[in-house]
Image (cartoon, rainbow, N blue to C red; front, side, top):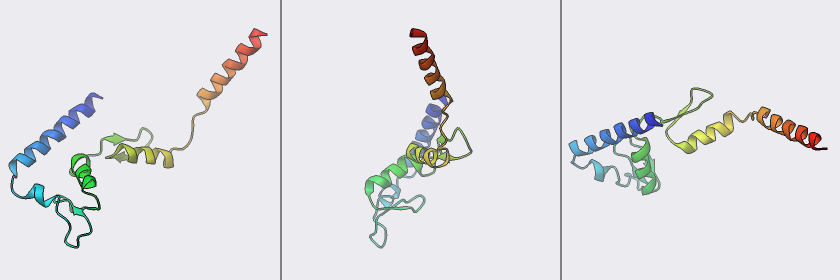
Length: 115
C-alpha cells in the first residue's frame, strides 16, 4: 500500500512538472480531434479515443506511466485494475477449494458431534 502511494506521488509530481514546463499547446493538442475526425488523439503517444473522457483517463492513469497492478501468480502487469481482473479471470481461473472443503468438514464434524 505504501509503495503504491509513493509511486502515485511520484507520477503526479512528474505530471505536474511536465505540464508546468511545457505550457505551449500540448494540453490543447492532446484533446484535439484527430485529422480524420474519428476521435480524440493523445498528443504524447498518438493513441486515438472515441470519447474525450477516455482520453482524459488515458492521460491520467496510463500514458507514460508504469503499470501499477501486478499479478500475484505470474509476471503480468496492468495499468488498469479492470485489466488485471480480466487477466485473473481468463488466465488463473483455478479455484482453491481446500478452504471450502475444510470449512465443510468442520460443519459436518460439528453437526455429528451435536447428535
